[in-house]
Amino acid sequence: MSTYRGHIAGGVATYALTAFFITQLAPTHQWPWYAHPAFIASTILGALFPDIDTRSTIQQFFLIALIAALPLALIYNIPVFIGLSITCLGALFIPHRTLTHRPWFLIALSLVLATIAYTRTHNHRLFLVICCVYFCTGALSHWFLDFGLRRLFPKK
Image: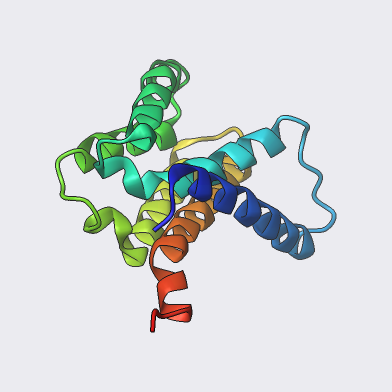
């Protein structure tokens, strides 16, 4: 089990790996200067997201970020953030290490958010979908740090 600092470090490492693979898939696509901080933020938010259901620093961080982002999402009609906000509020009512710590849920949530971003927005479609990809890889890094390392290195 990792602390929030460990999950942030894992999110940054995951961002680097994901950015490397995405640039290998689309080497000619140049992102504007503001895209990279958004991608890093998406990965770190994804790495912290599974612990939204605990009373912790991560939950406080997420709730403050959502409170700040929700009015902007409503004003600018960004459905991805609206959907993520609703999901986070729903996660407050489930026990820890249940739904938010399941890889299938993290992947399905990211796919739903990417689908909403692609179908409901007209500007910056690809940018929002790529943010969802970074969110998913960050969330999966959280799962890997919590459970995957135990399976790779079992205690004797």
